Length: 254
Ligand SMILES: O=C(O)c1ccccc1NCC(=O)[C@H](O)[C@H](O)COP(=O)(O)O
Image (cartoon, rainbow, N blue to C red):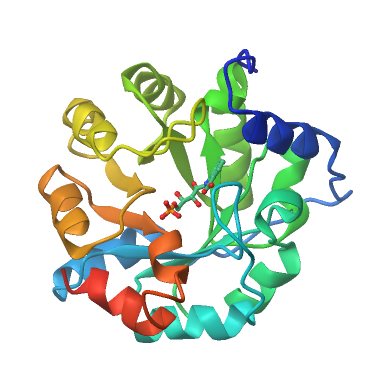
């Protein structure tokens, strides 16, 4: 794994917890709902292809939403979300594998498992349609984790933050890449990150703009920069901005 000394303390803490987490003694085999197909279908019918995230809390969020994850996910789909992301990290994001299970039973769109996976056995914690693999944390293990995820049937969204990590993802064989606008060293969000990295991705890669998309103008900006889809958590979960369904619809209709 890469050096973690330059990471924000909260992220180091997330990684420490991930290293300690138990993994089940079984091997999953999933029949996934295709995430790329769901994004393409949303695009074809005029929606901004959006992966809406059930994100109860985070190191950069005040308070915690304790709403039923399945009810939130249904509202997101009602608002036009092409897919749902569910945090399964418990200590820092208030997520759980049970929440993901409940969401996947409640909706018929693909469900992405959002966690900080560091070793193969952690893929087997819960069935999902796709899993997130973070290039920075997996380093030389990325290709192996990508193969292990695909062997189980998962789509794999490989997260990068700069050009070097994009190259690392492509070398590992990634065809679904998320560019995280949140810098894990400082936890600062800058939409220019996607704009800088996206032009270097080959056309046949499905590109997702992750983090920091708050307004319809942000959504349009990411689409104009080449995003095939958006991953949005905070702006959709923000109860002060509106209910989850209307928050989702606002971005999906941008
Ligand atoms: O969201 C955080 O505070 C955070 C802190 C440390 C590591 C990761 C973090 N977020 C994970 C994510 O990738 C986001 O939940 C996701 O991209 C959605 O971002 P946003 O729309 O900005 O909530």
